[in-house]
Amino acid sequence: MEDEDQKQEEVWTQLHHAVTETLAQYGTKNAFGEGDYWINDDNYGWARIQVGIQNLNLYRPAIVHELRSLLGDLPGWAITMAVDVVGKEKSWPLMGVTIRKHEIIDGLNRDILPEVFRTYHYADSRPGTGYD
Amino acid sequence: MSSTAYLTRQLERWTRPNAHLFVRPDWRRFVPRDQDDHPFALYENKYRPDQPRVPAGNPDGGQWTADGGSRSPGSQPTIKPPPINDPRVISDAVPDNDWKPGAQYAQNNTRQPEEWGRVTASNKGKGHHFVPNAVSEELQISDEARRVFDKARTGPLNDPSANWYDNEHRQYNRAVREELKTYIDKNNIESGRMTEAQARDFIKELHKSKNSAIRSFNLRAVRRHLRFLLLRIGRE
Image (tube, rainbow over all chains, first blue to last red; front, side):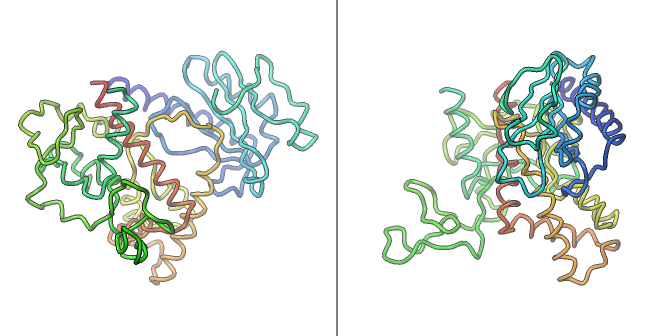
């Protein structure tokens, strides 16, 4: 159990760092919804890095696939990109994208997103929700 | 007993108002030196002076109740707990299926400290921070106070079968930032010189916060940590 905990800590730290570096190329991190995205800095012990997205441009397929490439050696791990647009907390349903090594779960509701984002398509993706 | 029933029972046990009575008196042997309280202290439903009472005329009249509502049938009234060094603090903190109130469990406990979910070296830095690092950074809080905030966390959380796309943490961050700004202004504190004692005091205030974004998020986090502890112990 100690080994598992230690391994989780190491992987989480490395992946958190890699996601931070990747997204820093495309926007500004801010924990209060005043930037483009936020990466949860707390390690809960889960095999997951959680990102909240304020700027929907970060859902561009190229960025999503770049994040997916970080999971190359990490089966079982995921990066979640939750839509977290300020002012839409109540009017928009919970939605986002879950990225795993072997799949992308596309939980974006195209009917709600502004038109410019509705054409985004992710190769190897399947529809799903935040429960998948 | 099914795992769900077991967890339900343990959650009820460790969130009851007098949960500390079932923590073994030598609990300090099993937690890191920098940890100020026993692992279950977060979950106990403690008395708050401003907590409403059931109105007179009701069968439970005068008893403490949940915020803004009447107490649910069969639930326990909230009472002020005695201090942790109370002589009645006699049994251990390891849940078991045959638990009986007041029984002596410490002698039979063979679990080693390193087996506790929360206290393994690699788990030590994990959990939900009640004061997010981003808040300390933005308000340029002193290193001394940051060290206190860094220790104030739940420990690892059970991974819930909840929607992964929830956005409550960002709202929590904003709410805590506002609470800390208010605390700093109210007490005429220069954030870069915030002391350890002031940081501890703020955390106490945070736990008493009536802001729903803070209360509900923290309650959910500590419940998930409690589930983590119970499931971890159950697996070993």
